Length: 407
Ligand SMILES: Cc1ncc(COP(=O)(O)O)c(C=O)c1O
Image (cartoon, rainbow, N blue to C red; front, side, top):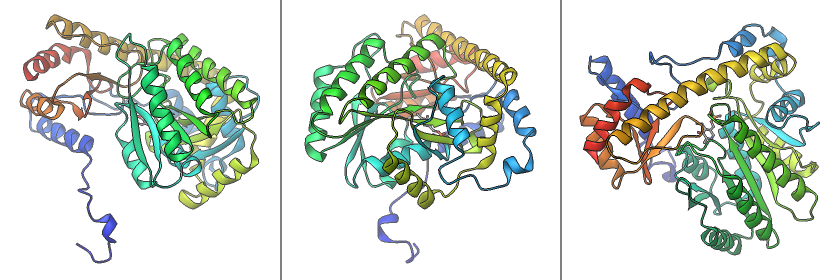
């Protein structure tokens, strides 16, 4: 152990469970075994190749040196922020307060730095995307959770109110990260009634101290219910507009990402935006944080977004590609659902995103037994994360049989 490494940084084991399982699955496949690898977090075609959206690559290839090489402004190109906000909430007419970030992860980090004091807790729903823990840890806060409602169940309002009030009493402020719609890893979305209840809880809570609702929007383009996604975004918009008119109202923002939406995972582009807020102090704080943590973000994806916003043909082609891949994900989800049902197991409800969650009393043990059948999934405290983004429909019967055996 290097003496130079400070004591508080010495206890990490350095292995990421998802990458480790994926590497193990790939090693077995490379050695000639037939393996079902549902650990991957990127969209793969049925041949196992990374899906790269052609419309985006065409735009990428057309970028000129001045659209790639210069520094972008510290807080991001305003035209980029406007175009990205407009993609989510068309016709808003302005981006409000916002800042370009390296992916949605960068936006999540910036939100912690602005809205929580070190040692405080952010609130989210469990199960959640594993890196939330690392993002919280690296930014000096911790994650507290409420359970993601079971399919067709309403959230437990009493429990929500109690938890929110406890956190508010303990720290005088609250930030909720809501990965909705198209939640990773359940593959589900909140109902309209659920959104209303959350809005009412947060509104009431904001009378006791500052409340921030951060929508973590990573998978919206991959859904079987585009109209419901639109409705959800419109509901959040209506809530944000109402709250922005009210003294001490809930601050609503979003962590946006081009990683999945544009298959630009390696482009590292996203933004933290507050389209209904005009507060110059927040804008300045974001710019300082961004300068201190990331400096300027990549110029090329920002230029690409601006070009896309001006090109209706490209927008239509991109929408068609999203539709096509959403249909592939739906077919995979349905195949898994029917295969599970064929074994008298509960099926799944998939509304959008790259994953579904399956029950397991002892997820790690089930995961180990699945490996014996050549099937790889990611164990979480609440169950198994199954990446339908990387598992073809034709593997569903084998997957379901192995899962039944492993339970
Ligand atoms: C729930 C969730 N939020 C945010 C992100 C952000 O990803 P990125 O930083 O690549 O934009 C991801 C990516 O997997 C995710 O699953």
